[in-house]
Image: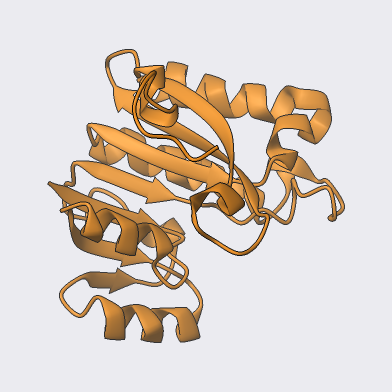
Length: 182
């Protein structure tokens, strides 16, 4: 399976997806330092600088796209400009690329402030765009890194989408039975 990464940072999603057996074909990241790190860690992936100049014309088709648009405009620590903000508003570029490439799946993450930004209207808009305009069935959940072997509390909203079909909620939840760490 193949993977493309928008707002790649230093490749957190990319590393996880490669460990799960995916091949990362391309990464889009505007920060030059981060692109240098990506080039070292993922030498076979193509890299692009600006999400606004990417799409069907230059990005290869992939099975899954991951994205974590900048969170400053929806963070409770920020000015709360929401999706109208310059940074978090890049969500619409993510949606445009989804419409152009139509991957079977996507994984999107952001801060929990997205849920309450603009009194919840921004999250409703994200869901509307992903489901109605882009054609994905979605499931979402807030996860905390402290429960996944990381020595910090870092809550994030994850949205998983499946093109043209309902997204099974189980993709974000624990199995009903099996070994557990109490």
